[in-house]
Length: 550
Image (cartoon, one colour):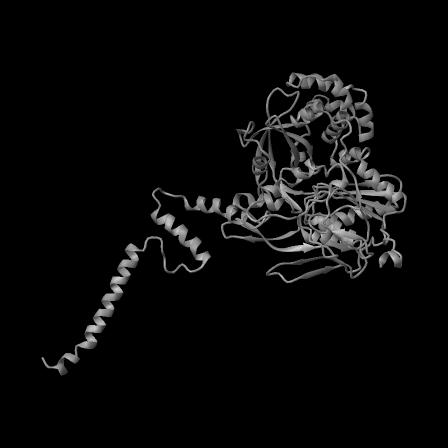
């Protein structure tokens, strides 16, 4: 063959070599690449690829759904303490906490000795209609015994809640009845209150206890304010202690009721969330009402937005202890399977520019979770001097009063935790829940007699004649708590407060319970003192003279 003929085969040979090269390369890529996948060039692809590798190659069979469910909280836990994953089975319960209503049977309950005790039956609700009563014990649901260790708040809600119009069969143990009573309850819409108490604390001043910032809280506030204004309320105590927050929108609406027009309430800002300002619109009906706001270490999130706006705008006085320090904004994002994440997308800042959020380390939130205990151990609950403010994070209110960032809202008036009468005997009785258990037992055995009293002052007057502390000591000793007469007498006022309070709550409602407790509450007393002295509107700090300023 001459050179000319050979040249005709060169393109064919080259093409064959290319095809062979592709086939050989593909073979080796498919069979010998191991875990090195060439398509993986970003971290998000790595996660998907890892799950595929585990599913395809892991030595044992793996339930991939369970693996993903376990991994989601771990991933979000590396971001911040408040980004969270909510499994589909828990999402409804979580959402119900801040909704205006839910579908259920309409009872308030407490779990005592692994049994559901009905404290109150909601007036007009499904349970009242079929004859359930306060004091009843739920011992069976849908013909299956429901007592023991499986009885938890979560399991009870799953059993008793359900679609509107659906029915549930409940077995009841009632004192005085030999056999179990059976009731079929048709579930209905049960309103949820987020304001637990609203009353005139004396002839001049009103008190409102806000439990959470939910869908209906603003409407409840308007109703509460109207109720108090009809009684010629001249000043207001808003109690946000132990209020862990809720919807930012509800807090903004509520603050708007007390601020003049065009006052900054709060602003949010994040890496992908440009700054957004929220201003008052001037339509509030109580812009000149003297206000004192109560906070403590349990006040968080929306509670801190509210108290921070009142403080920075010099609209009222804050009383209590430093708030929790939760200033991260979560956005709910739902998945197709019914689960969801609450992802932190921004921080919120008070009008002066303070970031409410306390420090945290990404992926290591043990210290964060223990912060409240650390504050207690360092003495912050008992002495304002133990709180070290970060002087590099000083900000100023509209009148020029200094306030500090770095975590939480520091009150204008510090009130230490009251430890008067605290003894080891009382602490053991409380920690073992013996006080709560005794109060339930006493209420159940004396319900008919106690029901004769229509208000808490008359019920309290009767309870004080019953020598309940002595009866409690006998009860506690049978439960394994050795009697300590000296310590018991030293803690007498604390025991009386708790025993009487629990019985009042069992027989009446939360508002009666709160009203009773407020009679001896030092923080409430300080708030009243501020209102009486006409000191609820902050004053500008005194100006230094020119020589001092120089």
